[in-house]
Image (cartoon, rainbow, N blue to C red; front, top):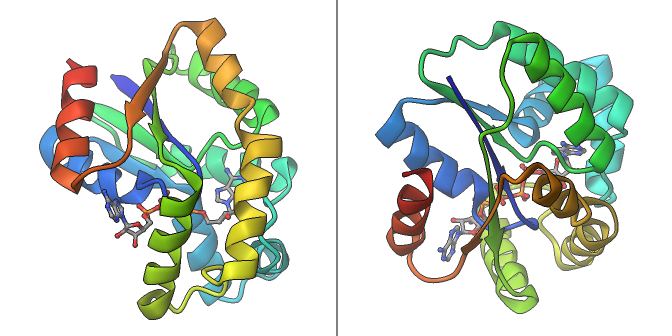
Length: 187
Ligand code: B4P
């Protein structure tokens, strides 16, 4: 069983590349962003709490998201592997994931870190905002999300560097070019 983390700033293509990985390798997919958006559209108590953070470009607090991740992982059927998309986003989340996987006799095998420069992130997300209907895809919130990434999420790289599983991937070019780099990294 392989456990893969796909990591990167907002708009770096985590969701886009996850779809391609799933298609080729048959991995199960856990996207915390998608889980939260479903909770919000179902108007659950958790969704109501999460909505305020997401609309403000902030991360949902660790204690909420770690519980969601744990119950999602319990419900996920996995034969060959699991891809974690958008989780972990803080060092405490990375520690919690290590503990969860240890209980299953596993660990993160590879952390694919998509590298994309600031201006490209903004233009991708503004473009997505034209059709996504997402309340966090507007310039003010996008800038905030990128700043939060640098403050709270980028330190996760150090965690996986220390674990020996950090793998930077150039995240610009066509979707297929980036995917080829990922396939090479996955061996
Ligand atoms: P997410 O849903 O994870 O979303 P994301 O970071 O915005 O996007 P992603 O990197 O997946 O980009 P995509 O492939 O769509 O998070 C949303 C929010 O939920 C967070 O801000 C946070 O508040 C909350 N949240 C989620 N997880 C959390 C956690 N663990 N802890 C706390 N809070 C959490 O690509 C973006 C666009 O670029 C798309 O339109 C795509 O078509 C385009 N694109 C992709 N690849 C391209 C390429 N090569 N060239 C040109 N365009 C490309």
